[in-house]
Image 1 (cartoon, one colour):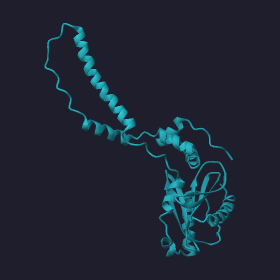
Image 2: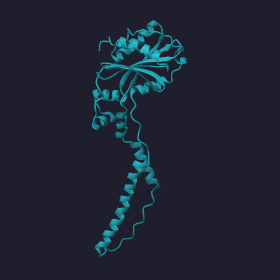
Image 3: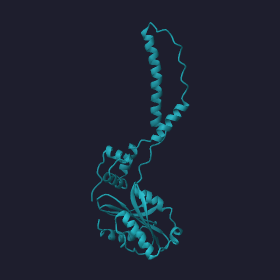
Image 4: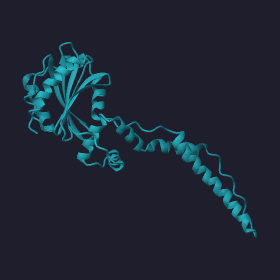
Length: 257
């Protein structure tokens, strides 16, 4: 299992600007899910352009009126007087610019939050599911097979032999997306009415073992095979999800990538 490498500021900036290649994007997206220090670095690199523009507008709107320029006067014989006026006006301009800079970085706006990974977005979506969301969704075997065939083609994994985890009833399979990548969501309902979802997304080349955790108050189980990231999410009891996740993880090890 590989460790998270130290990304350069240039690589992180390319990721933020949407200019990273697919391999780098996958690496950074995966690292953001486990490396809090990396998320902090990303937040520091993001430039809050909206806040900066708003700060300029507010400062300019509240700025005192420009002092009236004196009437044209003959060129003073004393060059020191001319330099004194120029210095005074320049000081005013420099002071305004300095005030803008200080206001921008001390008093106006707050940094944008660190980029959220796909697990965070999936968890936010899953919190909207209730028992009633899936109770009346009862596809026939033929309908279920057609749905799985459709998402299989989109993600590049044959889901026809997806295992039946004990206690979970298949409800539907649908194609979502995250950062331009396909994201398959397969929804289940536990016997007690708990919504559970198996999600699959293209990922980096490294394999990662089963890791239990939580997101948005829901239990999550994560693992990776070469090329794909897997997530099982739902409930708050821990043990049922881990048992279900082991069933799906064992199946995923035999998938030909």
